[in-house]
Image (tube, rainbow, N blue to C red; front, side):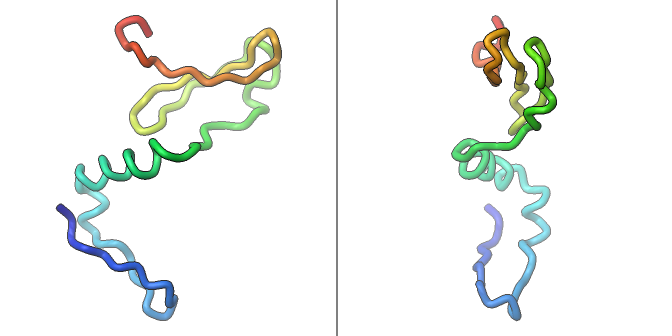
Length: 86
């Protein structure tokens, strides 16, 4: 468990998070659960899939994604939820 860190909104007392947090696997796991899994994550720009059939791949929290524009002109993102059939 990483050490406690108290956020202080007074910028004159600002400090960085403890160095150990940058390499602690437990902190990374909590960030995935509390940040990446609960909020929208920007993965690209609509211009990357300007035409139907255009696509790009990306990774969010170690999960590979495919973003494409369908023949109906709708942009969709896909995750390999069922990896053995992905």
